Length: 310
View 1 (cartoon, one colour):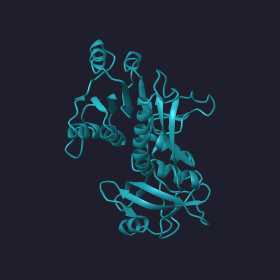
View 2 (view 1 turned 180 degrees about the horizontal axis):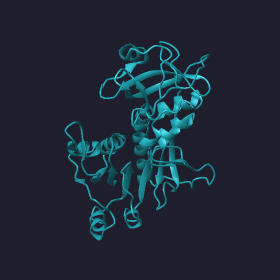
View 3 (view 1 turned 90 degrees about the vertical axis):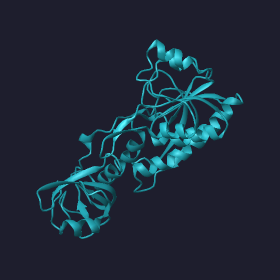
């Protein structure tokens, strides 16, 4: 099939690679413009941009899709279908209408649960038992279109959003590959989403990253794991030079422990919560770069039971 691919982050790269390997003609790859990254804040092309160039595919980075020029350019690709994976830009209706088979989105949740910007993080934070990916025909509404196929992925205890993200990437690439094969055979059927069970995955904000030790231990652990590796849940503690921010990248509930919320309970980095306690398994001090286990962090910070985290 003749495909326009639209995506930006690393989550979209395996799907682009799969469609190219399957022999589809990738007429154009749309991605967001290079962003500043790294210590030098130099412009860095998106992961999709880098992979598309490696595959010898044409790359477009329009600032908007709402202009007449953008619509004319898109129409000129003569696409059978557009495949959209975390592109990061809304598609207006006249773009949605241009491909012969419409626009298919690979969404990182089991719709209608977790429509919106952060389905992977929100699923972990909510304690969902499973997540998944779905192939949806796009409409003007936010993730409201009918769904053709899904693949489910269990969320194990202690799984971080980063780990779930990495499990969903190949599952999504395989799913979209199979979906286009069925579409090419005119055998892809769509089912409207259920009206019940709609939940929105609001964008993660830095303001919600601070750990609230007054919450139950299970909620604190899910909060930590759901924000790992980015933006990273954090607390502040006096590590010898006043208040210092520390990110927590993995946590589990600690059975049989309880204590004052925010108080370090033992040398294994167990911290009291509103009810119960959590064990902090991986941490990173501000500006230190590498990860440390709970025990390594306490030794390096010279903290003993009774210390308080805010």
